[in-house]
Image (cartoon, rainbow, N blue to C red; front, side):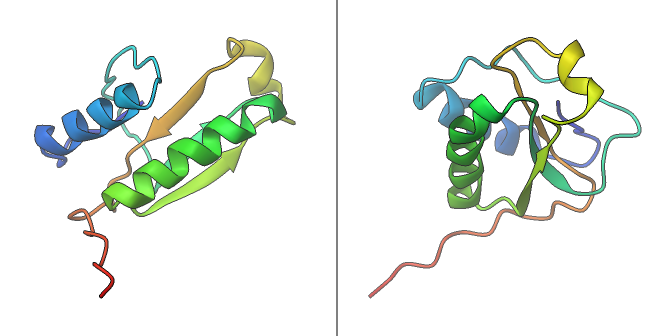
Length: 103
């Protein structure tokens, strides 16, 4: 899920391209109001932890200030199809931080 109120389209399309390039099925971007303040990768199953870790690292590499949220022990997991992760881009997400080149 995405909150795009102040988030340029180029960044979201870069993220979608990166996820698809790494084998993830990205069904689309959904505008959610009011959205979240912070940027999250949300998982709803313990089995999805490796995928959540992969998406988390991918987003960090692109420059997102991202955190993981575990909903696997809540009743939300029962309403979520197996294998689903959610990405929420929060209002606080500023310009993407470019990784520093190492000498």
